[in-house]
Image (cartoon, rainbow, N blue to C red; front, side, top):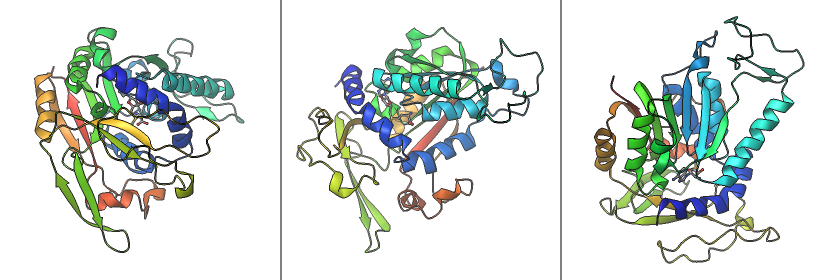
Length: 329
Ligand SMILES: C[S@@+](CC[C@H](N)C(=O)[O-])C[C@H]1O[C@@H](n2cnc3c(N)ncnc32)[C@H](O)[C@@H]1O
């Protein structure tokens, strides 16, 4: 399966994904992964928003939730890219709406605002947008190195995308090219040690995991199609699985609108061992600065994370991993 086929599959689920994630269905993202990712991300805005001339790229931005958070967190000018036109349109629509509905923008405005370096005052009744407007483009991450100019970004982020890309090394090589020397690339993926082609969480009678069965860790050649719903999709609204037998079929398109049942996401995943990821990273010219394994044990997570049954699994097993890389000077 090539990246264009993967893109078509994502595109077919993008409307449902956007609707569900914007209702808070992606608890791993909102309560664990993104807070951890931003907590360790080394570029943070200061009160004077001295970062407004920095340029950042978010690869595999989906409907743009995390891209918006990165823009707020860093104060930088951000471009979000995704292979799915449906996702990019959803991101653009939200951005246009945010910037029309809210009457205040901060320094964005590198061009239009005054030269004052302090944050301007909002109009009292407005909901503030304290970040620069994001630009979104349909781009295949495998081609990112050809799409943007060499050395044109100060940092690149990617949340939970690279394990979907057949040629993940091409993404790393491309990102290395478009980063300036000293620039940061931080990306998260499913943890390769705990998401091999065969795995099963073993739980006690209260649903608390006590072990994980792992096999076929070195089986890296094939695409795996995972089938799942977000955990808060009501059981009686889940459409029957069309095929539970094979891991190789192309995902069926979601059923038509009038079918009330919610289809399982059938999304491709390309498993690589931990040593493959580190080889890709080093061979593409990066140094590793930090590896982070998000866990519900962290004390900086939002208060809604505490006691959340979904993310609590990560108190004993890290399901995700974050690589923080930099391009040597
Ligand atoms: C799990 S979603 C993550 C979305 C978003 N980063 C987030 O955290 O909410 C993976 C995203 O990667 C995108 N994607 C998959 N393959 C891609 C490729 N080759 N180039 C660009 N985006 C891709 C999908 O369309 C999807 O939006």
